[in-house]
Image (cartoon, one colour):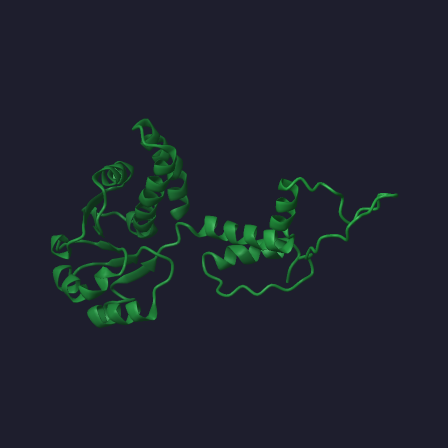
Length: 237
C-alpha cells in the first residue's frame, strides 16, 4: 500500500539528483511526486489484485510539471496504470476509473465531473481530512453513489513525518531544550542543580517528566494514532 510509496522516495530522489537537481529542490520535488504516487497507490492495490481486462485509468486533476509527470509515469508504468494530468476538467477521459483532486478549485466543477466521467469508481482528495463543506458538495454532485459505487479517499503520505515532528516539539517543550541551548550558545556552561561543593550552583532548570502523566490527543487519525502510540511507549496514559 502506501508504505510501498515511501520506499519509492529514495528512488525518486536518486533519479532527480542524477538529473542535476539541487538537493533541496530534489527533496521538494520528490515529496510532490510521492504525494501523487501515494494517491494512486491508495486505491490501486485493491483493484489490481483482481484480474482486469483493461488498464486502470487515473486522471490527476491538477497541473504537474512535465518532469514530475514523466517520473511518476516511470514509477507506475509496470502496474497497468494509464495516467493523465490536467488542470482542465474537460480533458478528463470519459472512461476514467480514478480522479485525484488537489486544492479547492475542483469544488466548483464537480457537476461537470459527474457528467464527463459517469463511470468513475474512486475520488482521492490529496490532503489529510475532508472538510464538511467539501463533503456536502461531493454529495450534491454524486448523490447516493458516493460511498457505494464511488469510493472517497483522502491522503496521509506525510503522516509519519508530521507525527515525528509533533513528538519532537513536545519533548523540546517538556525539557526546555531551547532555553538550555541558548545558554550554552552564549557560553554559559555552569552546572545547574548539580551538587558541586564550594560552587554557586543555580537551581535546576524546570523540566516536565512525561512518564505517568495523562496526554490528550485530539483526533486519532493517521497522525494522532502515531502520536498516541509513542506517548504510550513513554509511559503516558
